[in-house]
Amino acid sequence: MTKTEIRNHPKFYNVFISGPQEKRKLYTKNLNVGYRVYGEKLIEYRGEEYREWDPFRSKLAALILENPASNFLSNDLICLYLGASSGTTISHLSDILRSSIIYGVEFAERSIRQLIQNTSGRKNIIPILGDARYPESYAKSIFTKANIIYQDVAQPNQAEIAIHNCNYYLQDDGILILAIKSQSIDSIQKSERIYAKEKKILEKADYHIIESVNIHKYASNHIVLIVKKNTI
Ligand SMILES: C[S@@+](CC[C@H](N)C(=O)[O-])C[C@H]1O[C@@H](n2cnc3c(N)ncnc32)[C@H](O)[C@@H]1O
Image (cartoon, rainbow, N blue to C red; front, side):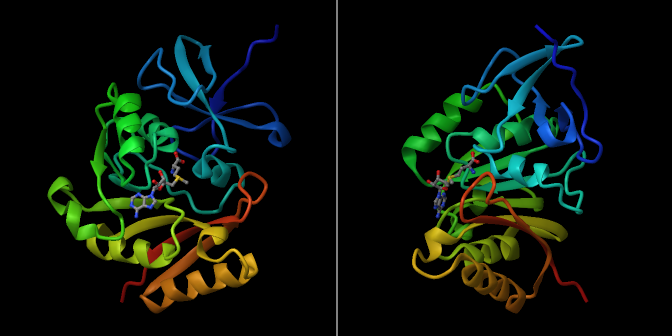
């Protein structure tokens, strides 16, 4: 059996890769050694344990595989994660932002219970039972403004939810990474029209789209937007 050789991603902080470009696999270094969150493969390499990061289960992994120009990961980022579910993507962010804080908001009680179970060995995740449509309702659980807000909530008004949270919690020079699922907004209209509408809503609210990345290869009817606040 050939051994998987793992190396640093050429751009993204604390993300690791194996294989050639066309067959690239992503990994993060397991912060909670010996534990899986969603049945992912664990790999030992040079005395460290890595977790394979599945782009079909995580839109953030899909985004990274699509190689966006923006380099949005670095040490010590404080992250607000909206739609944390049972912990798939947030656990990889926890591996990446090892000594930082990630606030994970989720409104489904069953999912938050699983999130707590799946991430109890990770000290950098703060699970919050809350509804992302009402950012003020979880203000008492969030102690600092975020450098990065990641949103994946599959709701009809995805852009508005993101704007409310950014206005409340995002630092002026922070970044929003917004997964947009067109089917959750309108299942009849063409995806491209829906994406254009959501982008307009963001722009009207004084945000600008740095990049729009199509991840249809991994998640049908999804794009991911990388967004910043307009500053004067
Ligand atoms: C597509 S799943 C997220 C998957 C997750 N981001 C991952 O990659 O591991 C969407 C999640 O958003 C949650 N959600 C939807 N609307 C929400 C809201 N208004 N507030 C908080 N969570 C919400 C759902 O309960 C669901 O768990």
